Image (cartoon, rainbow, N blue to C red; front, top):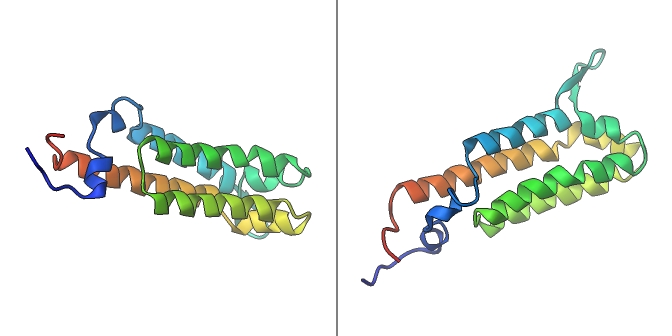
Length: 145
């Protein structure tokens, strides 16, 4: 059977995209919680500004930059595992790189970490990519290879 399919349909056609790799809504939710912890979990009372462990770890030179790099890379890996779109991966890489560069600058990086919330952005992109992949898969567009 010759079926015309878009690249997204081919990309998300195999059930292992979801079942085999274990990417599910619960896992995406765990990444969202981790992003909240790293970027917005705590409040600075006087300023009423949400901050997370990223900004707190950033006070120690080198520690914050590299400790908080791992979750960004992990979220990007999940997009790769599910066969996500390159533009989503590129945006996530850009946010992670920007956070790493901003966070590596003493003092300015600490302030930047309070305002530039790359983990929350990446978690949102991971959720959107998961929903896109699931909707393409659920539509049953790709019934046969």
